Length: 335
Image (cartoon, rainbow, N blue to C red; front, side, top):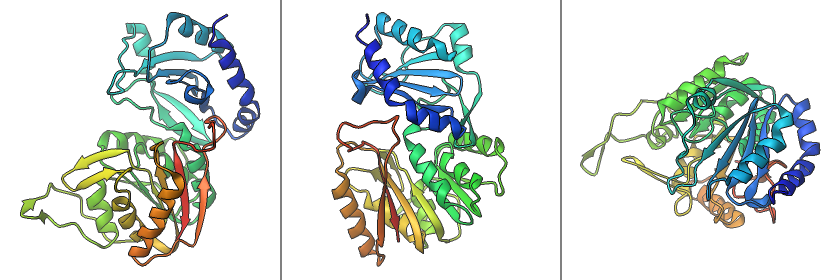
């Protein structure tokens, strides 16, 4: 028997209650196997609607492992796609046959908490269009969003924004630098019956948030002309969702979740209405949650704001943790 099979069986057993709950909630996108915790480091197996998405990040699958996975999940009747991302840049490295590639690139629709999203197992980018560990964050946003204005920063394909609009938000703004991602976000909005259609703003984070926060973005910085950026009116939001990548650099500033989260947090906080909520995400495993929270509180104080209450949003049971210290940290701050 393959050494992988008992690990897959154990993962199934751990998810029995969650999968029953998700089915009742009209959700068909979730993680079936989280290898870093469940015994095969670097292997993830996800269900996205009718697709079984297998991904490797450290070492490729052996033929035996691949066949074991296909056989184990065959009763689900899903279309299996394998993306090997074990190279240093995490890009998909394995070729598919022409027939497999056509199937992998087929546009599909998946559902989470009654919200519909576009999905393709392979597309021009690398990451799936919906990050499943963020489900707990989207769930919490849906519980809070009714009647509120919502700002979704680093919006990617707009999952949080569409979820907020579905839950009855009065106004939603998605901000992301990549027009390709916002194109998917607009398509996601069209898949759903929404009281308000999210506004998608293609912009570097820094000029967008500085303008919204009322700080403003100079067109010349230290004698250097800045790239063009979309003008935005200053406004504050009832709920702000901040989910930056680990590291990114542009002429306007640096995104660095390890060394300078306050550079992102401070202007986002200023764009959060008094008495509102800001949800901050940090997906760097080595960042200590308590130290990060302390940094957020001190940063808030420096701009004259008080963190009145803190709630940790924990990834759901398909993303288990050895010690409760999940790589993805989500802090909901009442400010």
